Length: 85
Image (cartoon, rainbow, N blue to C red; front, side, top):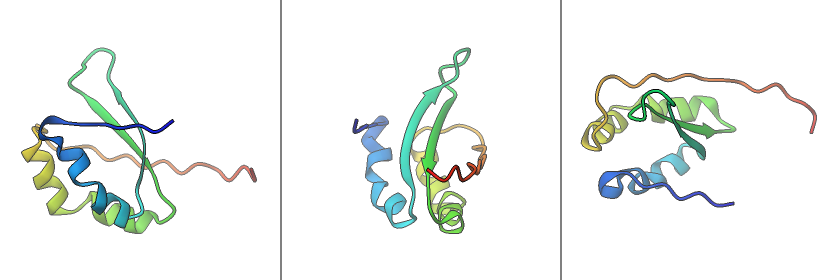
């Protein structure tokens, strides 16, 4: 299934080339059940350092503010164990 996600002004889609260049693959979008204004985006990558450089960039922070993000975003990183599959 291919997911297409849009945000006000289509700012999320407009930044897809930068995410691709950083090796980030969009996986999922969820919202908090108690606070639908809290949005969670999930990405996967084979190059954590390159992905972290992009998500920590001032350019991304600026784009997020332009897109209506309020407050400082929180970044969590999970490493999935190698299951051999």
